[in-house]
Length: 167
Image (cartoon, rainbow, N blue to C red; front, side, top):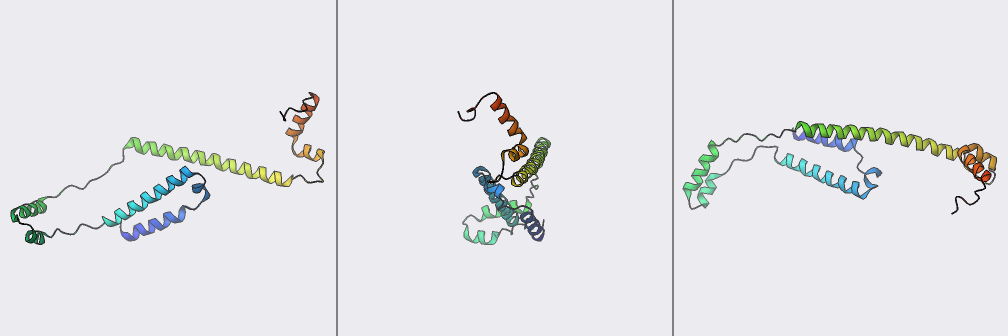
């Protein structure tokens, strides 16, 4: 991948993830994990940039002039000229790939559940704001707004459990 392509990808990645979001700062453990991930990603990008170009050729002439054993340098030079190591290729194992895919699917499920909880909580907050109590609010208004609490209260009165929630 060229430098320009990596730069574009890096910019797009930074644009799609808001690293200053409260989600990343709310928990010290998550904050530490995000920081270590960002450091790892930065070091990986730096290494990719550093090793993207082929290495410069070895200057055996200067080595011959500074080393006493010229035969040793010549042996290294002939070895360097004849050696052609195969490129190292990493293949992602199928088990690990399946595990990561399952983790992603689990995270998507948790995200859907969290979004559903957020919607329910926002609806509850709107209801509470709409039914806010003031000095003018009567007991019958509260009973209408919160029928479950009214039912529980009536049941406690009938059963003469005056101090049930106090003790």
